Length: 181
Image (cartoon, rainbow, N blue to C red; front, side):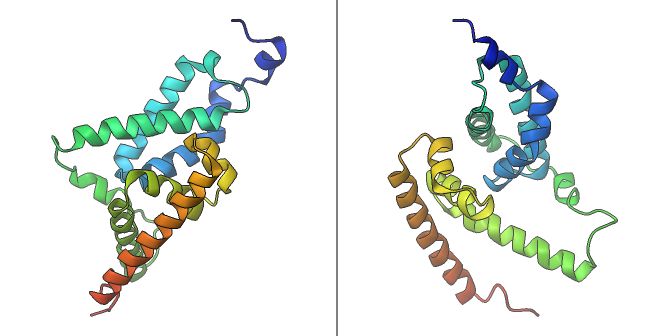
């Protein structure tokens, strides 16, 4: 089936697709548990796939399509992750000359690590909804569309995710992780 001329005109060029959605895809896969280096690789793979299949992407649904590809690529990478060791340089990639003061950078890194730990403890379907709502600030209707689920399911998953996240955070606080030395 050939797309209409209107659909063809509304289609984004590959560079526009990357410019419009790269940051979103990178943040999403990073919060789904990937290292910064892996997030770079996955984002690149997502956009390579998208540019190869750009004719199949319905205009106006680019973000939904990219999100679906990102989920699949992330899941594939995580399945393979148990076979390889984390590269030490990925930990150093977060430090740059324009970074905050050392004590602030340390606290930010601790906070990021804690966030990653808390997110990793959530089941994948709850983590995705939680990240989309709480980190990316998406509305429930957008989350339901991206996840391909009814809005009521998105609402339920978000409620359960908030409960589990809060419980895990309470447990961490009881361990006095935030207490400075």
